Length: 291
Image (cartoon, rainbow, N blue to C red; front, top):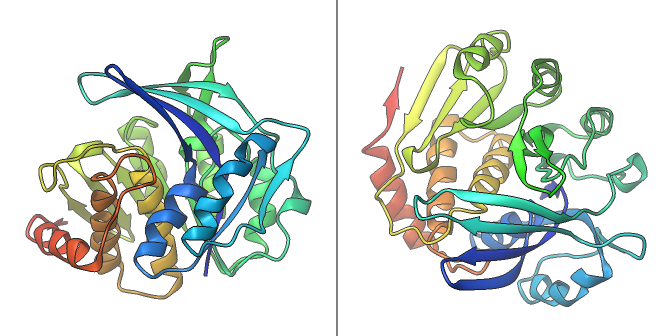
């Protein structure tokens, strides 16, 4: 089983003249999509009472909800996600539940992905998780987001924090928008025993491990409707497969394929299948480049 630590969210999504609400956050995206592929996921999160209406959607999919704490003291973390015409998005934080504390994170599975979305996991708490688990994957995005007075999101990477996270994690996923490439490469070289994923949107992603670099281009394979959550799926599944001891290159291609399949559906509600994923795997292998 894979544990996924991070805030669940209530996303308000705006695309053109349309807008709608749906559950979000890595515990939602990873469990909703990986469950369809037969993987067991344990969401470990917290939310306000306003999230209670979405818990039945987890139960209907056979996803456990006993580690999603419903709290009286905070509202559910909520983002307004506005898609622009150039396929980019603007994020605005509307509300935020409390930070994770050590007492929220006892009795963890042996393989855990930490995918925060609003700085809800501190370096100290990440260290606490590290001491409990065998394999730890981390998505850097929730450690780098900063918010202006109106809640609009930008990123600010502190090199010291990046180094600390790499020291703690077995696998780290970083968006190309989160860190300067030259600085990032110089840091990664110091950690040859780590698996680092660098995502580049429709241009695909790069995996760096040891002295090897593997890249796959994902754009144009499917008619993507919604990329939000694809990075979460990639990080979670890659962490799970590393925890199972699977071949890294196959795991990288397969995780990218499931992430690409996710983009066919809006929010967490897309439908994917093994046949669909296998067809994407075959196409991705034809685009694989190694160095």
